[in-house]
Length: 335
Image 1 (spheres, rainbow, N blue to C red):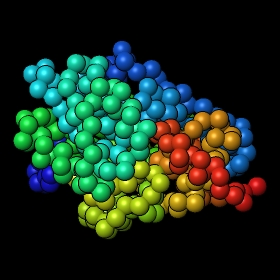
Image 2: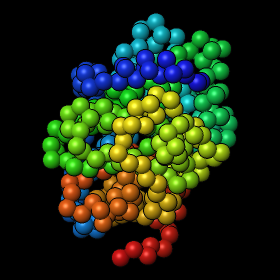
Image 3: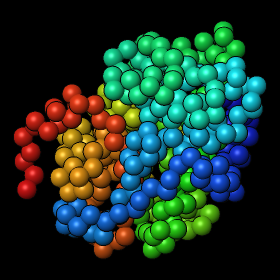
């Protein structure tokens, strides 16, 4: 589903600090505030003051649920009864499935074939109907859009939804309140909702904070779009970080992050695997590939980050057992 520039402009105007602050009130009955923690062993490994925003502690194990609950709370009751549909690699789908259960809505989720089986099981457990279609997220998304039209369901786009971004933006409010001295914030970027929420919050309340977005080198569509200044789909998105595996960047997030983010960086698959191990060893937290991306970038940038107050967002911990076994079985050459 492509959006005209006029539609994107109208949608971007609905992503605001006030809307994020209102979203926090909607989330409060359903989601607890997540901790912002320092881990001495992790700081010793990286060599600068570091705080981890533990979005992996949310009920679905990932930050996306903030957006799902905000979206469903604002959806009209007749549309809830008719049902919603979305496409996902897992965390967005779990978000919508849990929110649909909370608000009594029918929910259908389309995932690509071969998707993370444990994320699939979680979505089914939350009550969603699951459909497997296509080779990757973007093929699943096209099928979800077609089914929405054919069955009269409300399609929840994974990125072009202001209510999702406003909900996710609440994590940045919490960071700023818990650490007013933050100087650098590093976030993973798949669709870009977390980064757009951070841009909206920090540019309004503390614009001097450096915002860094992270993509996987094997799935660099948003990085390339930002670098070139125009939406730049990629031919493939191959990475163990399924939350970052998007071939086609989304119009609304790109319109916000294009001029709002200070820097975009890429991390290698080896760096992602190493960061998963590092987080487990030093914080005793499981991170999926996307969840470890900010830490991987912080390690890559450690020379220039020395002496600064850095926050990394551990966006999710939904790594499947097979991937975790493979990551842990690798020889680790790091000290």
